[in-house]
Image 1 (tube, rainbow, N blue to C red):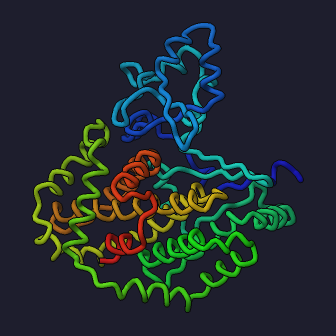
Image 2: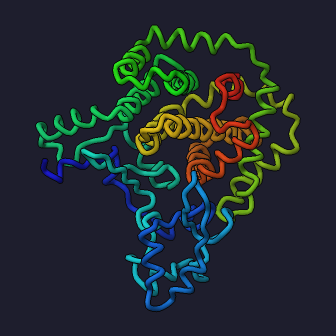
Amino acid sequence: MNKEINMLKISGYNDFKCTANKCKFTCCEGWDINIDKDTYERWEKAEKDSTYLLNGVKTKECNGKEKYFINKETFEKCPFLDCEGLCNIVKSHGEGYLSKTCHSFPRIKNDFEIKSEFSLSCACPEVIEILDKIKGKILMEAKCRNNKEGLLEIKNQGEELLELKIRESLIDIVSEEEFSLDERLLIGFDMLLNILEDESYTSEEILLEELEKYSDNEYRKEVAYVYNEIELNRVDSLLEINSLFLDMVENYREVSNLKCILEDISNFAERSNIESLSAEWKEYKKNFKEFNKLLEKCIVSKIYSNCISDDMEDMILSFQLIILEYLLVRYAVFLKYCINDEKIQNEEVKDYIVIFSRIIGNNAEAVLEFLSDGFEDPILEMGYLCFITLF
């Protein structure tokens, strides 16, 4: 196959341009920066500065494997930055010495047997602006649009991978406007949970039947009805999401470029009477719906980038983190809404999308460890997810 048409790019990919020093969210602070093995070995062999480079590295055990990260606390700036915010590695060795993460961010590349996909991270504010301007659906498009035969061949071959069929089912569910965004996320999670828990889905035929079942809107309505019938206490749900919010932002309130955005809502969350705030929630949710289109586009973009594993547990954890990001964005905007006398600013919503994409998405292993410690299992129970979503 022609290599060029074997590449697919997410909608808006070619529109990305780094705004550099005009960006209020530096890429070099507030998250755990991964160093790939090739870069680590290149630094080991560096004729000069090898010790300096390796002193900036720490190792962590992740899923039984040793991984390398920039040697800093999550909230700290990268130690390779100089006093002017420029990278000492680039200054001394050129961009070729940067890790793949630093070199490519916010671009994401996922390689499959039959194609490569290029997408963008919502942890970059410029990406959110690009997504917001897209009028239609977010798609993964062939690089050579004129070659329809090639596009069809890529599509057909891609569909042979079960994990990509599951991903397409997720995107189809999340894009169905007949349901609320909350319901769509829970229906998608329900599907993944059923596949994970039923060992018979190791059979491809049975798995495809399950995906077909969830493609039917009547069945989706049945699933949504069951979860909407759960009796929830709004105050209890708000107390729980408030506690989760404070836990998640705890280590980020001192990050210099996040402090001005997180500090006021964090202080408000700590001192507010949640019971009195609950009276504002119903009206707030109505007003917040105007941002559902943008949030849906961000969620679909994240599904394309992250929900790609052939391990079902990894797949559901990736989607669960996307749901948590959405819930925390929604709650952060609610806190700001209460502070701002019931006004929602478009730019604030976008800022919170970026921030929680960094706090959750860019620090996934730490978040999953937190969930595992708090709930004894990183995969949340469906009842709990409804409790913090549907109130």
